Length: 106
Image 1 (cartoon, rainbow, N blue to C red):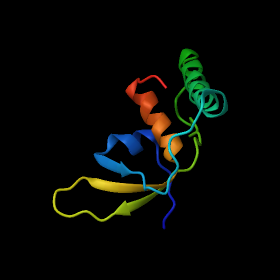
Image 2 (cartoon, one colour):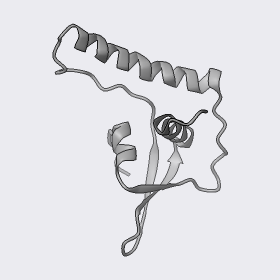
Image 3 (cartoon, rainbow, N blue to C red):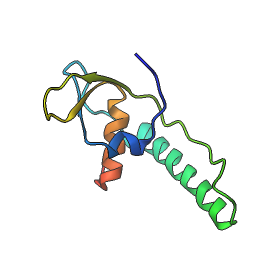
Image 4 (cartoon, helix red, strand yellow):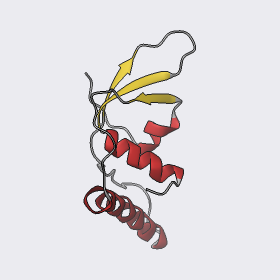
């Protein structure tokens, strides 16, 4: 297993299928305990970038922000099948981010 850093954009921009194994619990995140802290992280980071832009400061040196770990296992596919990744850890976070990006209400 090779750990590496990836962006949210990289997780969802590529043509890829995520498979949640049967041993994973169902989606259980709630507004107060998980959604709001994640949203505060996202909006706080966005506000910092917008503030920097408003001041005319350079975007050089904008630090990445850690939104949490996701553990994926590549599943071997054959032929023209879409790349498939098994979600070992991070299903709740991935699902929430996907809903946020799609504009769906939680």
